[in-house]
Length: 205
Image (cartoon, rainbow, N blue to C red; front, top):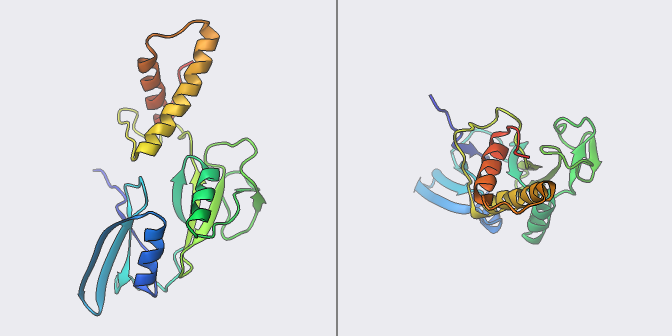
């Protein structure tokens, strides 16, 4: 039985303030429904995300600002920093963790700058909403083996697909340089590369 993460509930004190903050980041407003003064549900979705975020009145018993370590995945951490800065989210500087596996809680063991090898999963930045709920952005460019079903390839946005095409194009250029000839079957090569990359299996050479 498939079990897909659909919604994360975030506790806020001021619903309208939170709504304007997340809309200001370009998150899609899916719903704003109130059945009375004591119950209101607002749902927003980050660009390209299959899961959404809900906040409102009487939707959680958590204290406002207590949600921490909420993760968003991006394929370019530097571009993500620039966009969040432009949109007023006041992001942290890009960092990697001293342990090199995942990041510690809070700001412990943060090392300034992206992962030196720019390895997938290794570079982060953080920001908070007006209530102090903490978000972390993680750069993922290649999935580890077994993380995705190799029989299913999906892209959640045009920019996600475009980024995959650029990586395939760069790899294909190296492929043609090795073979010393133009590849008339490049669409098949691109498709094979993109499916394998997303599935986390060995890439074509």
